[in-house]
Image (cartoon, rainbow over all chains, first blue to last red; front, side, top):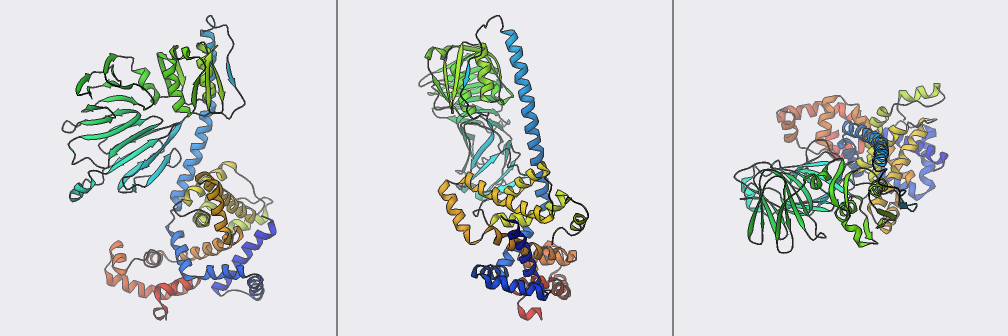
Length: 397
Length: 190
């Protein structure tokens, strides 16, 4: 845009206003008339501006915009950008400290130099809060850490509040008893893509942390239902609000998990052969193949194609994905890299299959770039990583 | 035309000094209107304009003149709209969108927005009670009943207030004369 051209814009706008207000002088009138006769486009634009319907629509739009709220949101965005930048600096510092510490610790054991080959790629960043909500009516809305809304917002028959990293659903149909017959089979779906995570609060107060590549389907309202039934594919951590009269049931393909009010983690990915339910507090009943398996805290039910195995586990291995660090206690590499693949939205390719059974103990920062994490893994194991595009090639050192 | 008093200051100093918040208050709604001309219906123009202002606050750019600043705002919003479309559509659709918008060039969109911005400002010059009634009945399209309920007044009070305010409205709103015509009708204006 050249300077004269745009200066010209404001002058024309001024001339048009003067004509509307009846305050134009000879010079302005002359300029405007010359401009109008210069091109049919100009004339058409003038007529559009003067069109009463269009004017009314524009005024309606201008008046309806909430400027103070807009300014508030701008300040929030600025603060968020600053936080992210500061966080980036701290993260690098933390990883550095970890590397130095790890290096000293493993000095005796490791003589090989670091073997992470990264071929001049784009930096692969960790996941962040993002999800898509699909309402019963079919419309969907994308939420992420930026599209934060202040206060509850009505969306498609549901009232939701989005805090950037968390969505809360409110029961709007509580008072509409006559509607219940119609609303019972309406489901809302929340989908978290690879490289995403999200936290939601259901209308009964149950809190669910959703991991990457996860889909949760739940009824718009369950006040008329005998049970609180939700459908899960992927991984989620549930903190179920206690309700003795209404059990909370998670349907996971070929089995279901039934509780009254506890916290537990379910990892039910289609690509994984085994689906795991890990109990942190309270009691949980896993129903599979027409049998009930009762679990207490610290226990895990591993559901395969046709059997269930209940065992005691280190719950940290299965629940640290919600925290700032992944913690692994003798976890096998295959399982760790599956998590890495989902969190960084990358593909893992094994050059040597025996690597899958290697174990790793330690922690990895969740909000670091993939290079930092893989370097950490290769420092303390005999594994070599090569990053090529969005593919991570794994081999023995 | 440009931020009233602020422009006076600009003449005395070499660099144009400005307060982002003042500019935001004056330009946020008009820029949203401007952005909606480039975006498809259903896209939120406020989102785009908020992002532009967030960068604006961060960069603390300096401008030589007020028009330089205005140009920069309009251009940034237009560019943000284009990258928004690029992000949310396939390339082909984005190109189509831009071609569709061809009859409203950047220049034309600026002219339209500037005129409407000034017109909307004259609504703000009305006394508060007149402004409220004006917005409710003529912009939000409420009938007397609804206005009365919202303001907890009797219908007769609303009617008589409207009648009393009419003269004032007519004078104040000569800017919005065409708008006035559709809502009042020519007969009631006289």
